[in-house]
Image (cartoon, rainbow, N blue to C red; front, side, top):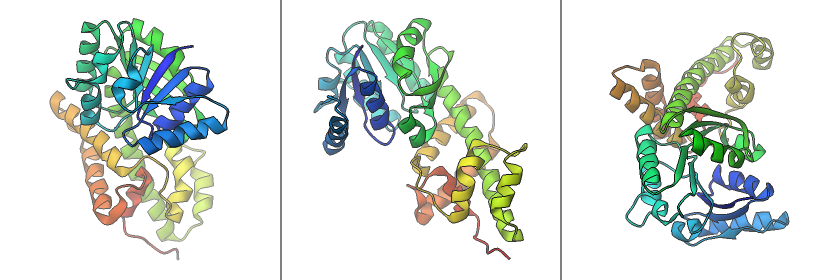
Length: 297
């Protein structure tokens, strides 16, 4: 088993780090809000698991075999890992860095280059599956990095993954995640309009779900969010703030490559409306709130 540091114990990181401890790894957690780290440690102690916490990222990563991160955005990751006193430069030679944060492919490549210069292995490994996937240990992970880095990272990530796919070299995992978020945005836009149309026509929305979820309209979003969207419930972990951050990455990549993503750009505008209406921390299915509510006939 490995000695592991996990940086970022939020709604995704905390359950992922817990799965590593349950798998028998020696885990040290760090979170910017120390109280959250202590709560994570206490919860695992109730399971009979002994984990540690660290006061700083540098303390967390010192001497560890593997460092994982699940932070907020490019600035957060760069600040923690690449600053003049960044954690990347405190890692021991030969150690492995796995970044589960969704960041730009450019930053992922920068981290991989810096890691290579220091004799470290690095994998950019954004995840899909949300809070539920993190808690159940069934995340889908899309990875970028060398074959050597992937060989080292895969056994570690298996503690919380249902699917691990090596997409390509450094940054490829993040490019794949951008594609993932564009696809989700389009599905949720159509689903939102479908729910509103069902409500407007006065049909039984439950029967509609039963009928169309077995056909070509079926999607994960439909099966897991249709009923809660009908009820106006939007507290499922992955906030609109984070989706807009991810869409900004995707739109930036598209611009750099000279292509347009008109649907993704439009959905991003709809999300901006929901943010302005107080939905910034609601989950992505709150996209339906940009459409006027209707009453069943």
